[in-house]
Image (cartoon, protein in one colour):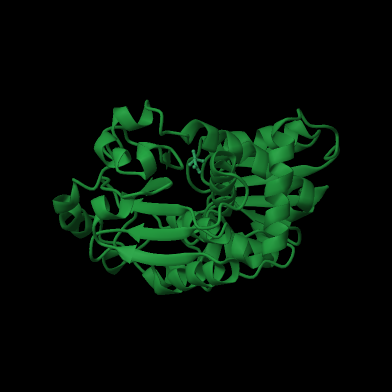
Length: 337
Ligand code: CP
């Protein structure tokens, strides 16, 4: 996750620089923006759908006088081969190597969203698409969610926590709660959220049923950031116990890694865990019943969390989504300003 000139994962940047991005994001939230990015172009390459990421990056560029180009491979843009060493006799008309280099000639930075696909966990964990763009674009590359990380989401998560709990809420309790979902989702969001809570010095609890352990290398990344910043990390297999006294409950589903690529088997394994859902009773167990509820969105109502939670006093998910805009304004001014 080293990011010389790129923004691929927050742990690739020094803590001080990340805190600087957060501090500036808080300041920017109160200002409409200026012309700092006049003449600058951000190319946004989406291999997967998005609402928040797409709209907030485009808005962030426009807020500061810049411009964003949207490219969706396979939808009005040539299908793109992302594997190396393949005979390109299938549908994809061009390779990432040329595409990334060409896009980099038109834009001052390239932002990429590419989730994992296929059945090979190790190949997905290598994050080949975002890594390929970083290798070939020739300009800074920003991760808009890859197999391993969603660093802009992680920054917005941290900013939202700071808004509610104060800057660097060391020792406050952050619970990452695995929740049931009909589909096996990537681990980029939960890992990025945990890393950034750890960076704030929080006591991080990761709650999930047995079998849904996060990738050991990612757990190591969370523990390393926690150790540097005075935080702690523990794992719990009991959701009610985990949320007891929590200051923050962050709901997120992710797929079981040992069943990666086998959605049917994964779905069958998780059916017994439908009760892993955040409801008013569980939020009532948080600190004085006033813990905050976070989710990256989109969220399936009454599956991941109940209406009572999302419409209740605990939820800060709309602020959290708004903060995507402000942390990305801060990031773009750093990378392009
Ligand atoms: N949280 C997030 O990344 O939302 P989108 O998938 O809508 O961009």
